[in-house]
Image (cartoon, rainbow, N blue to C red; front, top):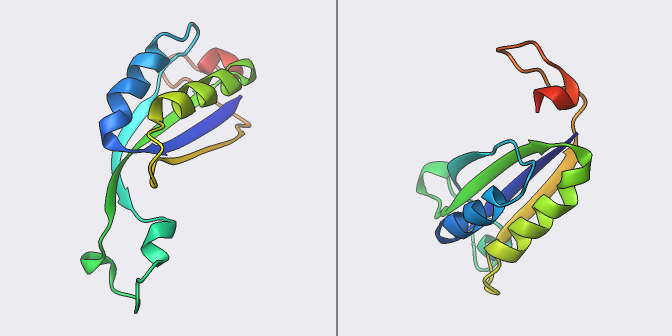
Length: 113
């Protein structure tokens, strides 16, 4: 199993979601509204400032856990549909998941995904 985390521009969320819904075998995703900064903040940032006054950029976070065979397709779909060509399009991360448990049924592993 793989975990996929994507941080994208909020206005691209609908495009990404519609494209992901077309993928056969995708069992679901979680979306969260988040704030943060990346490399562009470092340019001219000056002194460090407390979190409550920092200029954070609003983004959408997508979390997906999938079977290994779907990971590349999901990542490519997110990349293609979140791309604008501008700075700050976002990032995609992926890593191995060692365990999954469906709380309602007790299923584990790929069956829980």
